[in-house]
Structure formats: C-alpha cells, structure tokens
Image 1: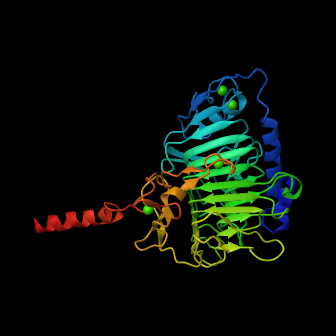
Image 2: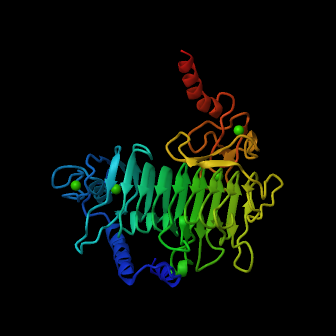
Image 3: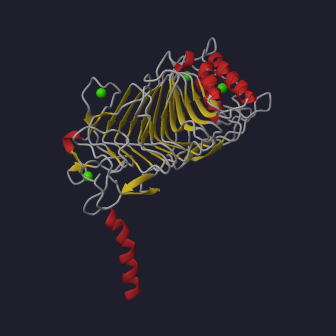
Length: 420
Ligand SMILES: [Ca+2]
Ligand SMILES: [Ca+2]
Ligand SMILES: [Ca+2]
Ligand SMILES: [Ca+2]
C-alpha cells in the first residue's frame, strides 16, 4: 500500500507528509490487528449496537460488546468482532453514528475491520456512519466484509477502503467523502443496489470521485483491483469511476444495469484490461466525457455485453444493441422511492424497454464463466421487467399505474377538495 500512496503523492494529490505518516501508521495497525487475540472465542456472534457514542470496548475478545459504561458502541462492536474468531454480524440500528474517538496522539481515527464480518444497518436512509475532517477512511476493510443497508459519509479521503480480499456492498449510500466514496486496493469490490454520490471534491482535478480502483503491491502491480457494479447509481461526484495506475491495463471493472451520470468530470476513466459494460447508462457528465482514456498507448476499451447507452459517443460502444451518442432523458438525482437516490427515466427516454427480458440478466456470483441469472429488481427494489422489457440503467420505469399516477393522484385529491 505504501507504493500506492507514494503514487498518490506523486500525482499532486495534496496529501501532506503529516497525513501520509498517519495513513501508514493506520496501515501498520491494520496488519497488527488482523491476528485475533490468543484464546479468543471461536464462534460467530451477533453484536447489536445500542449507543451512538464512539467508545472503545472495555475488554476485546471476551465475547461481549461493552464499553466502560456497558454500552455497545459501533467501535466497540468492531473491536469485539475483530478479536473474536469467526464471521460476526454487527447489527446497527437507525441513528447517526459520528466517529469522534481520538487516538493517543489526538487524531480522529476511522474504523478498521480486520476479521471477516457483516455490518448490517437499518437502511441507507436510517443508519449513517459519519467521518469528519482528519479521518482517512470511515471504514477500512483488511480482510473480507459485507456492508449493507447504511450510509457512509464525510470521510476526509475515503468512505470505504477495501485493502484485503473482498468487500461486498449492498443497498448503501456513499456520500460527501473527500477523495472517493469507495476505493479498492487490490481487493474484489462488489457493489449492488447502491448510490455513490457527491464524493470526490477535496482535490481538483479529482483523484477518485465516486469509485477508485487500484492494484496493490509495488506500484499497484501485484494484485489487480476488481470492481463489479450492479444496479447502482454513480452521480454528482467529482468524477465517476477512476481506474488507475502504476500498471496500466491491469485492473478489472464489470458494470451491469447501472447509471453513471452528472459527474463533474469524466464518467469512467478507462485504464484497465477489462471493462465489461452491460445494460448501462454513462451519460451527461457536467464538464468531461462519459468515457476517457480511450485513445493512445495507455487506453482501455469497453467490452460491450450489449444494451449500453452513452450520451457523447466517447465510450466506443460497438455492440449493435448499444445506443451511442443518445440523450437518455434522465430526471435529476433524487429520492424516487427505495432506500437510495436514483435518476428516473423520463417519459420518452430511449432507455425505457430497450432490453428484451431474456437479456435482462446479470452475473450473480462474480464469475463471468458461469451463466448469468435474471435481474428481477432495480436499484430501488422495483420489480424488473416492467412492460415486458427491461430498461437500461439502475432505474426501471413503472408502466400503467406507475409514475404518472403517483404524480397525478395528489393533484386529483386537491381538485376534488376544491370542488367540495
Ligand atoms: Ca468486549
Ligand atoms: Ca470475528
Ligand atoms: Ca457468473
Ligand atoms: Ca421496462
């Protein structure tokens, strides 16, 4: 990771030497913590958080999540799960969980998950884990974690940092993190039914943005980063998805039924050996192209699996079913139902019903060699297909008694009241 960070610095990221020392210290701490305590319990536990305070566990490894006041804070639950051998579940009720704990040097510090674990919130709009200035990442995953039904916000640099084997994010919202909503450094990053929005404005030009995909090891060239994005929205970030660097054409991205729109700079930075897009919209970035780095020696190319749409023609979409340089007619990023924000498809959008039901499929197991399975919901949980065919992107527009009724019904009620 040190080499990757060196590369960060060489890129003029604005990270100070002081900050990098702290980052390195956190990395060393992660490795040290990755070994459970001798004699730790060897059964999986469910640890239920019951306070929004940010406190340490009084006795990590005793099988009980309890701080000095006998309350189970999120940090205490993470410490306990790290110390217990086994894949533990951290249940986090609705609430706002600001990270306020200071280390021995007086620096704010994020949460490091160093054993296999699942973090389960009460919903992306209900459970928020919040960083602050000086926090490198809200959540750093050293091995393997599943993170679902919560929001991760306000890290100075990274919302979630995947440094180990894998991270599986489902129904999460990642927002207002300084460099990127989530970064993988040589790990397999799987994201489903999620929104990554309004991240990556701490440096200009952005380094990261919504999602940052890096390899690990010497100059990021030992283990490739791997991103698999399904049924998700990447919007209004400093940039959408950035894949880089050290080793070009090394990392892997796979994007299915997602919407990458309205980002300040590029939509997808192609610097990778494999860029498989299926049923995906990349459109309407504010100041940059939908896809960049598609020319020259270091270029990446989209391997279209069909039914993609870009609005400026920069993604080189070559499948006969793709729509290149076509306006998708997206609504603004907003609450359209479901736990995370989406871009609705406006009436008349060419993305509506563009996909035959038989091709409305996705890779459910992360193995492109096994058959795809039907994709039966959109990002919000609305059933797919509607009207017999699927829509391109993360949003499936309702048919019949759908969006129009939802809009018109309140109007009809008002009119009826006025008549009375
Ligand atoms: Ca304990
Ligand atoms: Ca554990
Ligand atoms: Ca598969
Ligand atoms: Ca449809």
